[in-house]
Image 1 (spheres, helix red, strand yellow):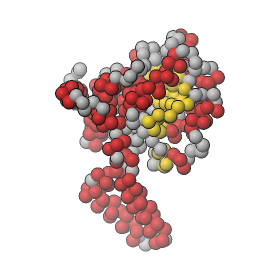
Image 2: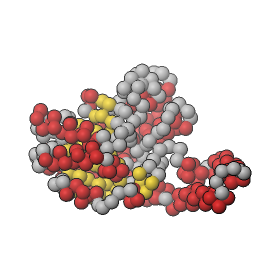
Image 3: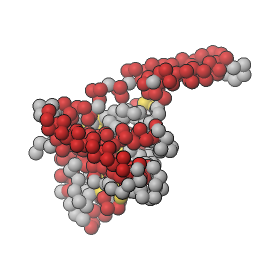
Image 4: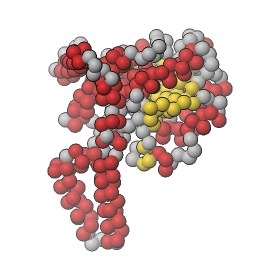
Length: 342
């Protein structure tokens, strides 16, 4: 069965516009603290969540907004939560990293690797109480170095749990390249525990959907877990406000303040030697310049744009879908900010 690209693109676009609106609120100062967006992960999430059914559960990491939206959680309740309002999804107490919906069997956490044991619990409950239902764990490749996730893979294998482990691999563990902190191949780790593993292009929603379908059918049929490694790109880096990206996007605004601080540090009488300061300055400049070639800046790595290209043969339908989605998202944010109920 071929993927319904129109439906998948609609979900991806809705998520993208929603998170872009969230980013604006954050930049405008309405949302406090860090903000981790899932822009760039839309194809991975849509390809899997679109195949979930009533009774299925999902454990989400600190980028859970897209999955919750696609699963049917009220978008206005998420906005209120991020704004810290009592009418939010979790009463305004959880923020963007701790979103929960009992009605949708969805739970998220900012603890790296915690989606493994959470999803294993969901899957164990499904195995006994709701045969045919599955659980999905979403996490980044850095979580694969956490003991609790490895233990969850082992238990899922031993107990043949109906569980899909989804690794969203962008090649970066916050600001460190993952290849510098991870040994071996992730798929081989899982196979060593008896968990079948597959790799997929996480920017191609049709490919994600097809590969995930096999894993999901396997889980529903009582055949146990599968590990899916999906390569993707976080378009906003690890969090909003990532400085190298800010400098490149608004050099006239960002560079002066940084330049003054660096100059003061370089000329300060006390502290590190001039040689060490010069080396540190060089490292900073190299970090900024490397962003010029960063995959996060390449339009080809945008899953929403790639999905849209496949629909260009029907411009009227595409324009109507995009206009309708934009109106919906605008209405949600306008109403919430105005204090109206939806």
